Image 1: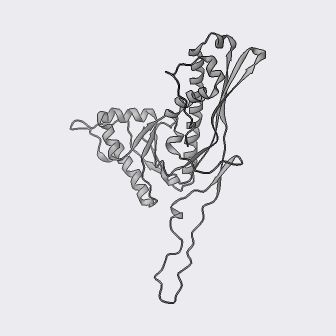
Image 2: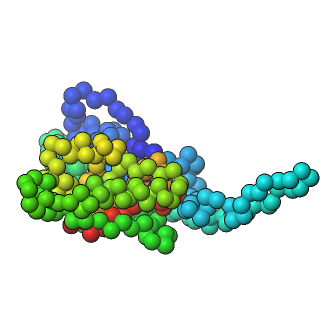
Image 3: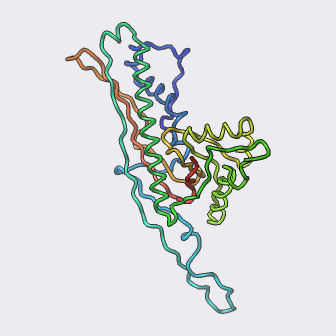
Length: 296
């Protein structure tokens, strides 16, 4: 579910400060335009399809122990009964709604003089801060999901910082390359037998730079060979990569999507601009995530 599903047609993106303050949805549109390209939440999670009620969402986590029944099926002889099969039910969990937002003031002088650059800077700073908080919350949610697993979903990786693919000596062995880490993560998923195919790899910009340096123009082909999309964010811990199956990880819903309100502060002769979003997210399939460690 997108953080803001609306869309406003603007003429050349030209709008005055006064017009923006009188039409808060225009500010919301601008915030969404800045937030969405860098938003990790919508890359990893999908909408649950259920309404957010009572400040939270009840959900369950599925692991490999929920894949098969505890008692096997049997070949029934004529006149016999089939065996009663049973499997452990996932424990219900509750994901609580969170409320992230902030506000800033625009003086009457700035409004009257149409100080649009200052206004847009304030909007940009607010969008960056909302993005950071949502991305941090996404990583925290992934980590909470991994913590439910006995092995924490961890794959021991190799250093991506000193790769050498050229020359006759000192060439990085194939078993020590990032491609080996990608393959190991997918192999672990295949052994889980949960139908997981990793399609997204999340890295810190430092690891993205290491991959770009090592593979150069071939990086796109390397990722394509694993059917992977690369996404980098400063909010992903350095030295760690997350491989995820976006359609299987979990959900993000909003009790209230990105919203902007404005109001008059007559005492100080200024207008307040306040924007917020109320997301709720959770991991329903922890095995749809693999954490590759030790890659810095």
